[in-house]
Image (cartoon, rainbow, N blue to C red):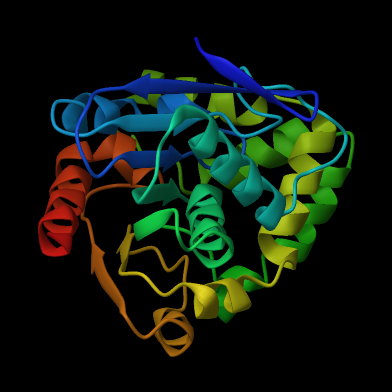
Length: 256
């Protein structure tokens, strides 16, 4: 798998397909680039697809620092420059959706549009109440079990226990310091300002499980369009890829 080294940190990625606009796929907290395999397969026939392993995830290095949402966004923008991707549509799931918005705000010349999949970018009160105990649990030695219990609430794949277990197995793996740092930044960084700085078209595709307060999202980013899929947990791009792919296809068509 190809990789590039930024300031001593090896960043792994998949680069597949051809065609414009390029699509850059950004995975969720504790995931990796494989979480967008159905989308790379679907869109690779007509678009260049770049699926990134964030630092600390997948086959990328796990340094001690660099896990703020803006820092991950800068990694993505740097990698795009290294491989010759510009004016891309950035597609991110959960944490990756938050990073995608930061990419658009910090690197506006790079981004033609953003698709956010079920990200807790401005979570409603009920969801926000779960965050402090989650962060404390992930800081503890029991972080893997805490991760399993939390993610298990939303993992989906109820009719496919083997797929569900495989998914949770990936989500509980990885370095402790990475899980703590990224989770703290997911909910601790100024994501509202990033939304206000996002000037390109933005599509929010939700699971219907209330991960974002869309009224607050619209107040910060008036051009956002929102839709929900049905019949899935949080990992919508894996569980109902046809619905997610259709939503992205429609967004790309509207961009022209």
